[in-house]
Length: 366
Image 1 (spheres, one colour):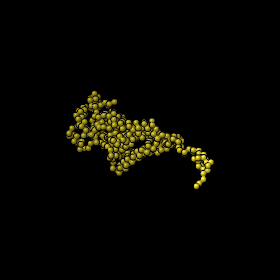
Image 2 (cartoon, rainbow, N blue to C red):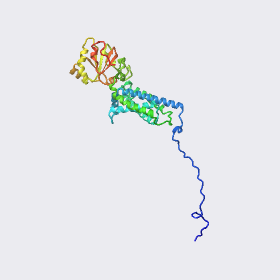
Image 3 (cartoon, rainbow, N blue to C red):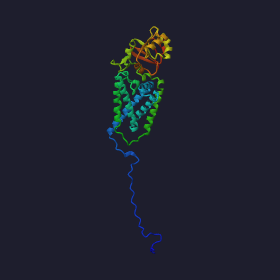
Image 4 (cartoon, helix red, strand yellow):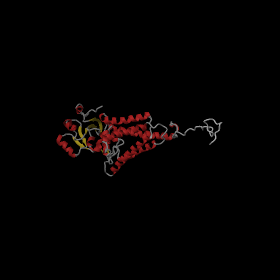
């Protein structure tokens, strides 16, 4: 039987050790919550170059949005011609594209160069170049006509497919490459005020495009406006060029002399059929302006229109590529004096105003 030490304190162990002192706590190697000093700040030249590239790219996108939002129907037709409406209607694709371009353009213009802005801007730039490159290749092989109203800028810009490709390469790719320089990763990913402004712009662009056809902006949205000459209204080349392009003064040379009243319309338009009697009466008046209808309708439809309605005015056929940049909605009319446009009118010309002054076929809306 084991012996017990009588002097031992009850409840104590004979082998108990004195407690050891605790080591001091060391802080964990965690990054601070604020990213103010997480990344080195880029140099000033790189920051300035990056900001300049972002502003240039944003400005180009916003100008492109403005040009296409003025004529959303023309933009939708171009989307359909490019085959980009397989999943959604061309009109819906047009509005979505305008919202994307407007939001990205405003964000870049305000200096937001985070990945959520630059990544979709890169995809958008690549799409523009691919579409323009394909159009250029098709035009070079005779698959499509030589006229190009680039998907980037709409019908306002008159360029050949080759010009559209190389100009977009310079206007989009170079600023995009600069925008990646000097990005300060210490800045917030979503700056609240600038992000909100970009979101408002993304919503406002398709809303404006939706209402734009109702606004009196034809002179601003098309190439046809007072002061322009018929030799400047061309397709397939720059304004006034004779190599490979066709201009309005060559399609309708009689418009370059005297006082003319021109109507752009489709011969299947019921409004034009109802206006034949009034146009005939005006055209038969002594001293009145010469009335001409410019249309893309073919010869068979012209004959059908003539025998059905009996117009006494001239009907001149013109390529659709030449006429499309001159209107947003048909019909549209304009007055010409010796080859220079003097006035434009939405719809058919207001012939009652012409009876007050034979030298002024109609008075344009203000």
